[in-house]
Image (tube, rainbow, N blue to C red):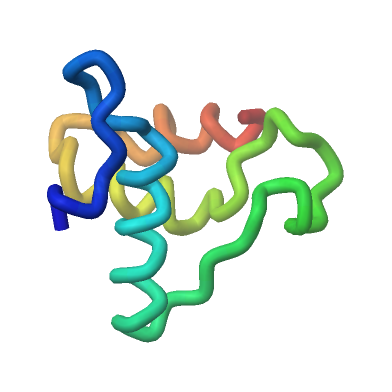
Length: 74
């Protein structure tokens, strides 16, 4: 893969990494969308709050449910 990346002044171009990752994910069955094409009320809001809360519960066992509920304003 690295041989296909543009090398500019000793640095690889970020968009090449992004395109390579997107291509890999699409081959794995993921659907890649531009952020502007996702409908949501507020661009500052988390897209999938349920997923975020579950991740926090799974990875931070010391966090109480009451504390997680305060994140719903995100």
